[in-house]
Amino acid sequence: MKKIGMVVAMQSEVKSFLSKRNLPIETEKHGGFEVMKFNLGDNPVICVKSGVGEIFASAATQMLVSVYGVDLIINFGVCGSLVDQVKVGEVAVVSGVVHYDFDTSAIDGCEVGRYLQYPEVVLRPDAELIKKVKEIYPEISQVVCASADKFVADEKIKENLAKTYGASVCEMESAGVLLTSLNAGVPCLIVKAVSDGKGGADEFKKMVDYSSSQYVELIYKLSETL
Image (cartoon, rainbow, N blue to C red):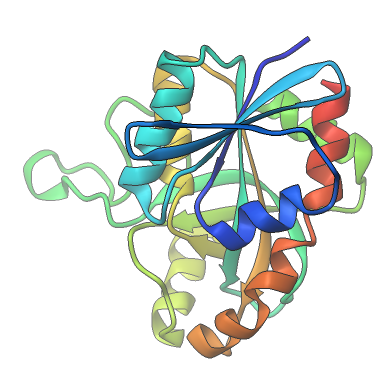
């Protein structure tokens, strides 16, 4: 049995996940966070709607670790595509995250995006959890995610992120979730569905609900087999 913590940023992402099954859910408030408790298989799940952005996501993750004592963290939600090969509606498992607007280079010469305590710019989610996802969905893409507190709609910025970091997707929570999990020594998995590409914000508004529904069965299957 594993106690699973889930961090989900937006209401649409939570709604899509919970609406697929008639789960008995216990809800409570902890600070400013809405917390939902339910079971998947033999595993208790504590799901937090964090709100958008790295700070909210990091705070929600730390709460799951410190208050609820979870054994692992799963972050799922939508993201934007940076490359033509990753299509709207596609689900991908994140094999690396770069916090691309973290920059201490002026004082320590460290590469933009890298924290000194880590050996590379790209931070790595848990390899064993990624392996389990691949066993369930062998064809799923593995991507590097560029993460920061900004919605990226500008094509030049997208091209630069893809070229500089080898990133295929971008969003606003993964770095906060992963850094907090790594610091706490808790395994972390990140799964994302693409809600927008060259269509930018307008495409996001049209596709966010549909894309949010695409990763649901993967998360259920994974959570029931841990």
